[in-house]
Image 1 (tube, rainbow, N blue to C red):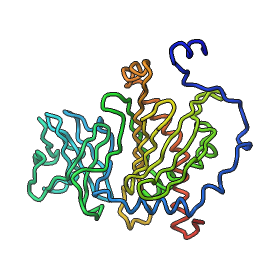
Image 2 (cartoon, one colour; image 1 turned 90 degrees about the vertical axis):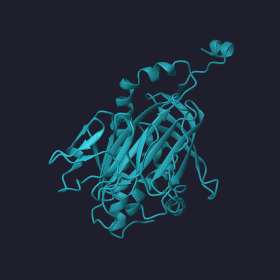
Image 3 (tube, rainbow, N blue to C red; image 1 turned 180 degrees about the vertical axis):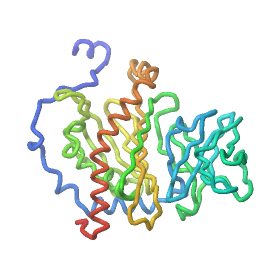
Image 4 (cartoon, one colour; image 1 turned 90 degrees about the horizontal axis):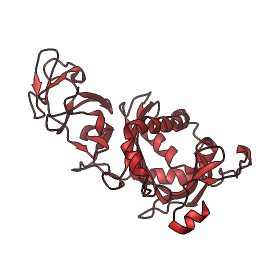
Length: 335
């Protein structure tokens, strides 16, 4: 293997690692300072979102398919596509007698209510006003000014991703009993990675903490576990471009330029005593290795595996976020 690397410059993606016990790793609690995480969360919360919310994967809203119903901040939203693929969104209740438009049908690109046949083509009609929408090719966003309460913007803050057509993407969604800030706080605590997720991460070090301003990123060295003894070491940055998004971008090692975007979308109203938040995570993987073209070709088979991996991590991380909300809401949060 080393002769091949010398001749061609090829390097194996995997590294062998000696097995070590979970309890033998260096504790990270001193570095994971509550004030540092709280400051990073406060700066993220102050960034403008333009009232844009991620509602799901682009491929979930299909041309010729049924409409999709979502709830954001207690507001019902319906989404569908015209025959040409144009995305539409608006209130989820029919303006006639309030029928749930998510259960209606799309006929020739027009949304037709299944109660009395009222047709909506995406333009204002009888008090029904459409919402601004944006399809970035991976995720669908909707702008809800009454929910966001900020100065609206024409477009959402879409993270930089691998060049269009060069990546393999998958979107995973799960719902938890917490608020968006609890999800974001989880992601702005990289120190928990190898302790809380030893089945996925080892040898995690935070090499640089956020400084605020234009240099507000956690720089992390970590190895993704493939088997008990084989890992893939990378360097990554964690940033929060808006109040409800944290992006992990691989900047060095295998899969450089790949991103994992974690979007936290509130489902309930702000004053709800039992808040619910949707975690919508988009993984956009990229690689300059020749074999990655085969991975892109096998995308339909690989996406369920990618979602399963994200689901295992979020089984734990959602418990983290829900616990944080429970402590905050009862006044017992130590931070």
